Length: 154
Image 1 (cartoon, rainbow, N blue to C red):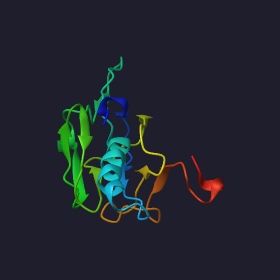
Image 2 (tube, one colour):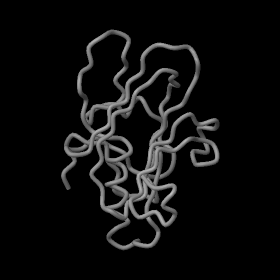
Image 3 (tube, one colour):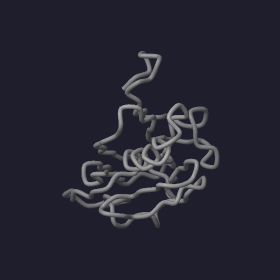
């Protein structure tokens, strides 16, 4: 799998308000055989990304660069998160989230995804309960090409 094609930069600039930024990996239940393992890996790449691109200016915080950054997150779930080949990946477990240890007010996320067309993944933002990451407690930037309800598609 080409991990270097999946990227996400998450940077924070100043601010006092507490806002959570999270990532998620969710496996499509219709394709559990080979797609379970591949889907989790691809969704992990989509959610967490791989590569750091330097920004000019002071006050920015790099959270993930593909080889480091896991220390900035609390894992939730049983996914086996690790840095591998320039990517943050997980290829076993029923799914999981990486929740940032700090909260951010003024942030930018740059995401580039390479994922199977059946992938259902996303990045959760501004979660009110970091222990219960999901659509009820967070805003989600959804990545799901085959969603049955087109009004919610990406």
